[in-house]
Amino acid sequence: MTSHSNSNQSLFKPLTGADAPVDIWFNDQALSVPGGRSVAAALLAAGVSRFRATPVSGSPRAPYCMMGACFECLVEIDGVPSRQSCMVQVRAGMRIRSQEGARDLPPMSANVPENVHGR
Image (cartoon, rainbow, N blue to C red):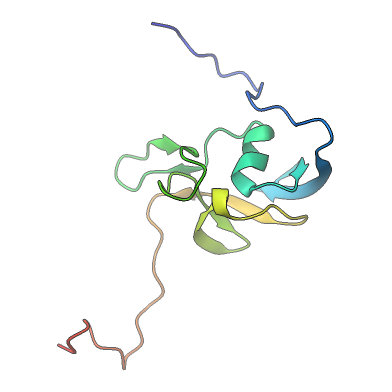
């Protein structure tokens, strides 16, 4: 069994000839990340290893599939919760927050039935 250290070194390195870096915010910390890729890839390249916490146990999660199938990379982007960071292209000025537990849904409208059958 091997042990893992909590170093700040990223396993992800920028490609030579990559797009110019863009400045974003992650959990109120300014970051300069590689442009032209997904938010998930940019954050991983910047050394971020915890994107969210599970609703039940609070276990840390990070991107897994990088193609929008697993929902492990959910974050809040510019105030919108539950965004799949692997499916959104990073752009300058983004404000990204890790997602802690379950997110609340907006309240239902008074004139919307409780279910599809109107009961």
